[in-house]
Image 1: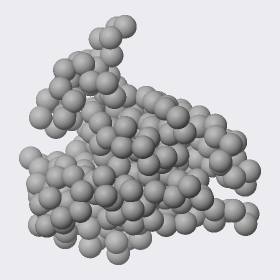
Image 2: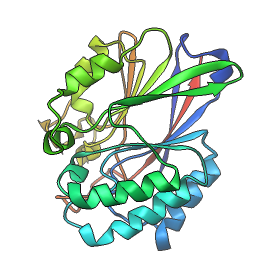
Image 3: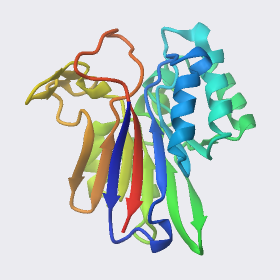
Image 4: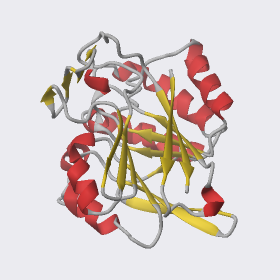
Length: 250
């Protein structure tokens, strides 16, 4: 359930060698142990420097379970600073999500709506930036495209970690020289076939190009989490849920 990914890049400051990011994606209001005790225990044992939540922590078909989500994030922030971006499911329960967002902010979650924050360590810094899911931007009334959001936040001066729900935007991340992107949404292709990979993913269709794992092109690394929960399709095959633990090195 814990998948380790190692990112080596000369742009990572020496001070951030060994820096660990635990990525939680596509929880979809799922419970692992009572009140997510098993998931939280896994995060504690991983001892991450930050936790990155890359969308769809909620599920538009399970609105009654938002208290479960609220409880999870309130406990997650006690483990490590927690950064969050929206997914498409938050967009489709936007009124309920805004109430949840207020609770998350009060708990200390860093919610990034097209914003960035600096993380300092030993006199050096990296940037964490986050963009909203395209559905969320549309339904919240924003007229800014995803491409504009990414371009506005791109920087070549500081190693940048972007949280974004959508892996199918990989070429846009590459074009903007984003160093590391953490995504989800594809659910690992739902059904994983030997020697083939994922069968189907939202917004990519059958045999998705970006379904799980690490993708690299030019200076950009993209991690696609298989996620934790299920949504429209309730079953997985050869595709266990996962938390991804990313370790930075230079």
